[in-house]
Image (cartoon, rainbow, N blue to C red; front, side, top):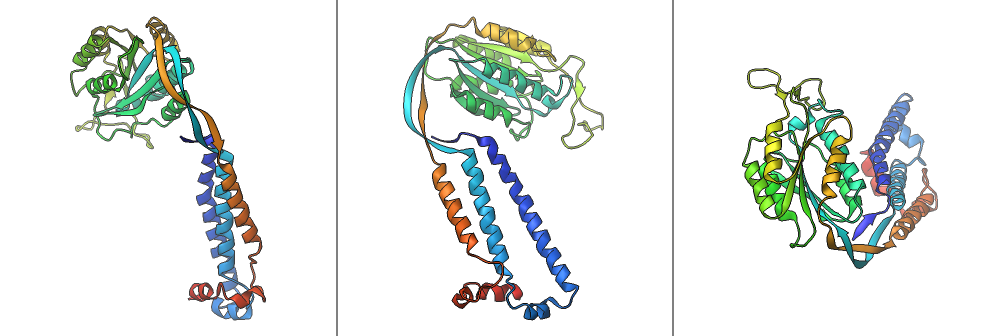
Length: 347
């Protein structure tokens, strides 16, 4: 298994386009300054030692070295030893609604962001349990197979958005069906599906799916997101809200009766999320009542550092860059390495 010990440093790569932009701007500005003194082609004849290509080669070599050093900071590693672990815990599948209505802000900062906060706390509170994630709107997809890798779970949580599922809608039944199939082989460990939604089910038989889960000894808990009064759905990147075909602003309301019906059919509990942490506490308490059993999991217990090869390559590139001069070198120019490129650049 390959991983980065410090993946947060990879965000520094976002600086690369900025550096390229600054370099191109500086190159254009330099050409403009030369143009003030005369025709650039004639001026080039007066500056025979000035190279056009060498500064570009040096810049891109340095840029490549910077990218390699960023990778070194992120600390790439390969897993080398797999160990089997037995833990006393439960198995939990999360079915998270990512439809557009989850962008409504009757729960702060929004229904979806509040749901992610609840899930983050839930993962933080786990020690020996397994967790998986299904996201759904008009369709349902497995985002994270059931696992004991909490680091990966938190990483997937941070990337969740309403753009993850192309088809809009709220297929709660499909999400529950997929969650049921996502559990591993039958075991004595307690199993639960936590559905986080505003309850606006327009697609399928969510109650029937919850009953099927209960028949398979899987309880279905539901966390309702939103308020009965509802709120408009903001359009990302604008100050506007979604409107219907008649031009009226769409108000999304929490369908609490539907949420409660799903929870009853799944022999679980229903709780409405608000701006406090009450939903997290109630769900955690409910999960604690489930039977715990031996859960086998495979984990990488040892990792080999791989940053050395990236660091060595960066060093070699910087050494090579050191011997490339901005101006033409009389001795090295005899090798005519850059001559062809210089002619092409001038054209």
